[in-house]
Length: 336
Figure (cartoon, rainbow, N blue to C red):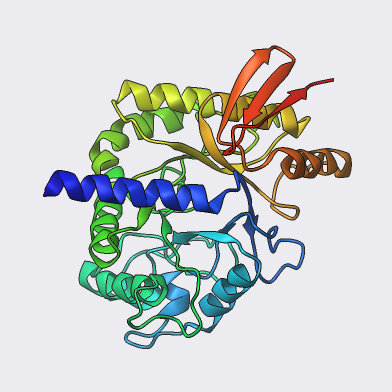
């Protein structure tokens, strides 16, 4: 029976992935008209409205308006949401005298970034959040037609800009969240909190943390932001991340949910796909940090328009790759 359930859930995941079709997406910010995402693609709100403090700023009182607006917009534009959950709210953190943190997203974000004081109160929030957007017909958002299936629990926890806690704290929050979400929504797909690159300190953190959380996520997740020297990795870290996963015996699909490029983006994206990335989410037009030139963004958009929806990619030569599609057709891309 257990084996049958695993097979059914795997089928649901594969079906959901196939139905989403697009291999591309963008970080989005609904208050910025230049960062609303593209029709028919993935969107990852960052920080987004899925923040405990934003939804339940006062214990027991839930504010859904901003989350509903985001979900409604995504539905109208056939976007698939990867929702990042931020497990912090001011009233909970104050209850055990957590230290304030400098908000990475300004005054509209939580003032605290530590482990919840009450995991039971956090559980209540999680259940209500998932229940509203899971599409099971009970307690759903009015007008929900496209449920949220993909949940990204936390963001770059090894980076104290986003989380003030130990590795053990992160592991506890992550595994706890995954169990609660999966119990409420059995077909949910849990995405690992994105690793902030593959610099030595990141590798050290994840080499230790991954074995402790590997049974509680479905998708491995890497971010690529340019380093302190302003340089980028040619494979957008995907090759090194894949090696790290293999070294700790984690066999999961890889998504690149923050992709910043320094030079021509198309070759970098192709390299990332060839090294195992299934989905690539661009950091967006107005994201902090290094900006993509208008010329390169135009080339990236043309590439996405021409080649999106592929089911596999293979290298023909150093200067040519072949994309295969669901109907068996192929398209070749040659680099200048």
